[in-house]
Image 1: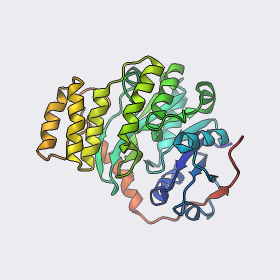
Image 2 (image 1 turned 45 degrees about the horizontal axis):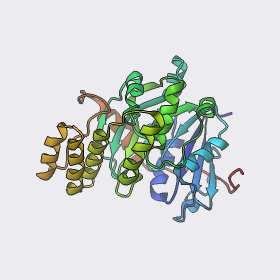
Image 3 (image 1 turned 60 degrees about the horizontal axis):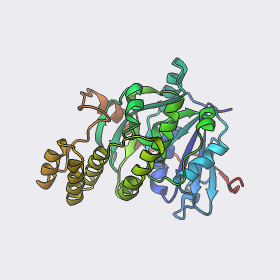
Length: 324
């Protein structure tokens, strides 16, 4: 039996998926299986993942897309390992990511774990990076915003815990992972790996740009858990995302909404955006930005390895339909 099952939902991301898979197959000192859920791709994903020798990777295909949450749930259903790791098809892992997280789980009584991250662009330039908040703060802040850095690509969780809290909500598109972390936090706090082990990729057209769905679903999360969502923080994050795409007008509008929500810090940021400043730094998950000496350099040490030549991982294709 493998130590961990890695679940990757994908749809029409063949170019990005190639590099993502490489960062899974280079994981050190971990016995893993990979379930790649192809959620109705029509871009050549099937050809790219044709077999070449690595039988750890299995593809499950959906002719009719189920959506990201539905694809993740299918992977959970098929998983064989006692631990489950989630990975988006455009994010990247350090080669010791899973090993460090499994070791962290073994040192404490936590049932789920996250690590540190950086945000990178399409050329793997690091746009942002800072140490993650400690577990107690993550649990505290989850009732206001999605406090787990890098989202689903960062988390490893015990399979038995998922059977207790339930699957991802397929009615949520932008907040399904936050909804899951809130349920996990009621089982107990996570533990963490305090080094950058995930690169969260930002690029035009990524799902993180679907702000309309995000702000609609904030009300769903607030009502479901009886919590007070920090909407100003979400508007500030939306503004930062718009600036990363050089959409200055949109960023100013989001900052304006944050200001109306009481976020006075956004006054200066909105002014900077109007003046054409496009490099406003995103704040860490909590509190003022802390010093992160060597943080980006740690991430660059493994990101730079991705520019070296490599062979494609081997894939085993499974065309079985979803369970009834």
